[in-house]
Length: 514
Image (cartoon, rainbow, N blue to C red; front, top):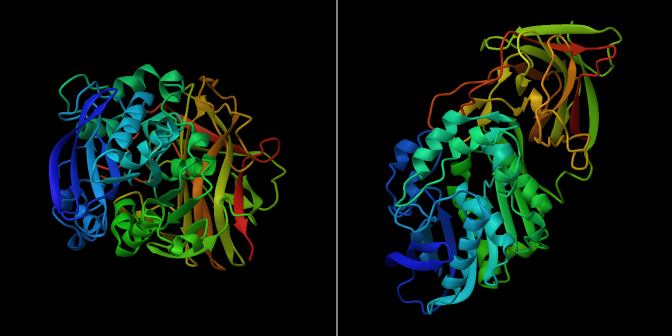
């Protein structure tokens, strides 16, 4: 393997620097680009940083940067790997901004420069995990002539809704830690925490950071996980929106980094790039358009091939909330009822259960409609967890996020003042909040809110139960660098959920009957 450190690549934002790994004796090879602000050099103690992630460390070389392909096997397979420090990060020139069009056009220039190198075949791929993946959407939307394929593995595509302000709820502690990983440069670095404070609604500051998905027309292999509370929604939504004729979606049941480095996953990554960067006629031509991990409990799940997402044969059932009984019912309660919980107490919650008498598969997007009122605040931050209970009524834990093994089955969020919907983009099973304004609550006056439950796939056997939890604080708290900590919250006093009668509080559930 030939290693070239600090290769200078000119872009319209200034010179950026890359470490390029390529086969020593090959004349011309395709290139895979990884672009992020975290540092192209493996300077992080990944075994400590990724403790609990499930990564098979024994399979990785010492050359692996965070969230990137391992250069050793890839150069053996006849590829060049170019790991680029983002504009304004480390020693790359320019002012560092994040997810902006200016960054995307710098990526465009990087693709074209690498395609012209004398050792390059002229075919370039782009990919990796998280930031390396998120930039794939925006760079591909600029249509670099030599970009041949992208492999976004866990790629949030709307950083307002999915990372910085989940459904309007800010995550300042999480972003503070993220800025510690990214905010290293020689010139000015954008303060995303200040951006969150100055732009609490989805204005132009955030709008420009969402790529034009329809403009993406290169072959795409997009991967995410049902347990992922950061990248799941964005990966699915962007995949649905891109216009690529050859596009594949995989939604797994394991953890973010664990799945990326599994030998079976690496082999599929290789097959994808072999097909579109080397024109190899291989098994990719027989891949299903969609592959999902159907889950049962903890880390137990099985892949199943599908033709599209949402699944074409999905149907929806309405389960009505009953505040008196703490239940989910197939019939709407005739009489109104209410249940309250202290909004700032971690132990405060409202729960609603249903026990299934037959086998049920919940696969798709879900929606929770609540009628909510407050007594001491003009806003309410709502955290929703969807849980599975076994036949004895005990909670069944699931793999969750990047590091954890005992999370909820499903999840959703909403800041009540952000409840206004984009009527053109909303569907009955997937509310789309505009986040264009804030509609304050009036004490004691119930209002309807529609909460998006992120995509899921879980099997229930007869005698098992589904539980919906509504709280004013996170459904479950963890400690660790990669836990999304939400703060500050807009809660005080009690939240009251109203059901029955005129209050059509319900769960809109995706069901697969096969």
